[in-house]
Amino acid sequence: MNAQAQQDALRSIPPGLPTYDDVVAAAGRIEGVAHRTPVLTSRTADEQTGGTLFFKAENLQRAGAFKFRGAYNAIAQLSPEAKARGVVAFSSGNHAQAIAYAGQLQGVPTVIIMPQDAPAMKVAATKGYGGEVVLYDRYTEDREAIGRRLSEERGLTLIPPYDHEDVIAGQGTAAKELFEEVGSLDMLFVCTGGGGLLAGSALAARALSPECRIYGVEPEAGNDAQQSFRSGTIVKIPVPTTIADGAQTTYIGSKTFPIMRALVDDILTVSDAQLIDTMRFFIERMKIVVEPTGCLSAAAALNNLVTCEGKRVGIIISGGNVDPRALAGFLAV
Ligand SMILES: *Cc1c(COP(=O)(O)O)cnc(C)c1O
Image (cartoon, rainbow, N blue to C red; front, top):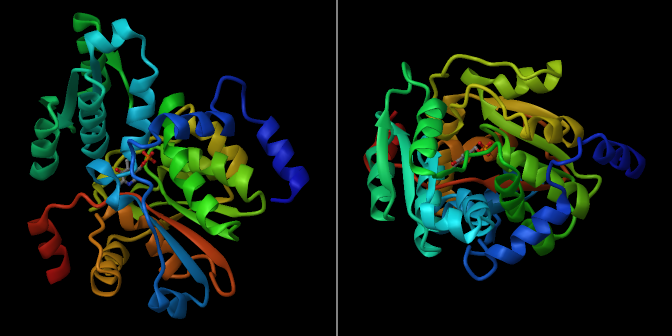
């Protein structure tokens, strides 16, 4: 986007949604608590794509994913009374762990609603951080209804995984750190489920590197964000079958969507096979463990879905929570 288009786009975001100022405020709240994760580079990746790639390694964030940023930022802003009563969250895993951990660090009790088929490691980690876990059936029960019921019964504050102003602002701090460290970029690839990371990253990108092209990347089997982005209305899909369990969302958020529509350039999709190749690349070449969902952004760049040749490219690696046995299974095929 050029400067004028950027100004127009920012003006088109409805009032009440987070702005870059909220990302800056979130960065102040998480400072010294969240890790300032490293930015990694790889000559192999650069040779393969012809670009200069910068990988923001949120797989090395506390609790193993960027979600800690939004969770901590949201809990930090609750009133003392709300903190004492506690919070409830529903999540396929990383948001749950992040809420439980951020709650523990701030002395706030947490109740986490997780699908029965969530990876065992994620359930165990959530309990390990002191979260009370309530399991539900992802295919027959409505987690939002369970969340609402618990919040009414026990006075808990519901913190959703992506469709929340403070969550979006918190997630934007990862991209903010990336731009502060490497300067302006030509392109930024962001893993996309419900769009919290993408919306927050877009706010940071438009402020710190206005001409940067911003791409959300989601699993091919669950391309609701792409359909929504391209059609202009939120499209709901059935629960997609993909190894990217952190992006099995069935529709994009009502708060993330207007920000995406205004600031993002396009939504791309990658296959599970491309995610597995990317996991292998990260282990073999960069010596890091990245979960399937965390590979979405890199898979788009490494497969040149948009050509990276001659470009400075940012890639947000979103998380690293993968069960070692599941990982071994992926790599064996
Ligand atoms: C939650 C999550 C995503 C998707 O984030 P949204 O804000 O829902 O788009 C991507 N990767 C990982 C590892 C996640 O935990």
